[in-house]
Image 1 (tube, one colour):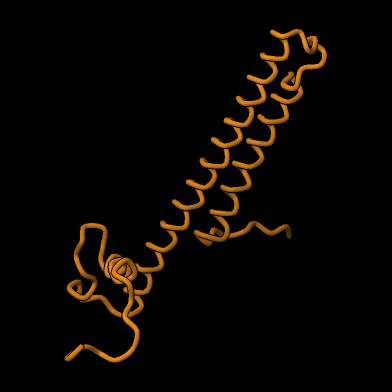
Image 2 (cartoon, rainbow, N blue to C red):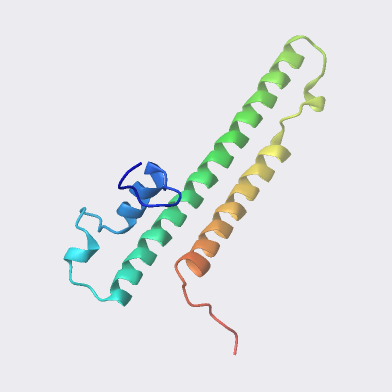
Amino acid sequence: MTGDAPGPRLPQAVLARIAELETTDDGTPLSQLGLSVPDKIALSDAQIRRNIAYAIMCLFAIVNIATLWFIYFLFEADQRDLAARLTDASGRIINAHVIITLLGATTVQLGTVMVIMARYVFKAPVDEAD
């Protein structure tokens, strides 16, 4: 350990992420652009906001895909029950009400996610009633 700095060392993944935040989209280091400190902060802030938006949209997609998988699982259970004559058409799990509810809930979720991203992640102004 001769020549090493004292104290704990950061993992390579953390060091790589710090280096990524200190570069522009084309890979140019911020230190070579001749930017002021506020400009560097603004660029880093924009990258963080973009990463948050990406994470939110990925999470939204994952949750909706999981919901669709669950609905498919229930649909398959419905079909097995109907084929085995364990239930009739009136006792189905997946019916028109379930589909309408899912469509409405997905629409509300998407609208809510977009409003939250616009208002809090990208600091869009809020219209206030006079």
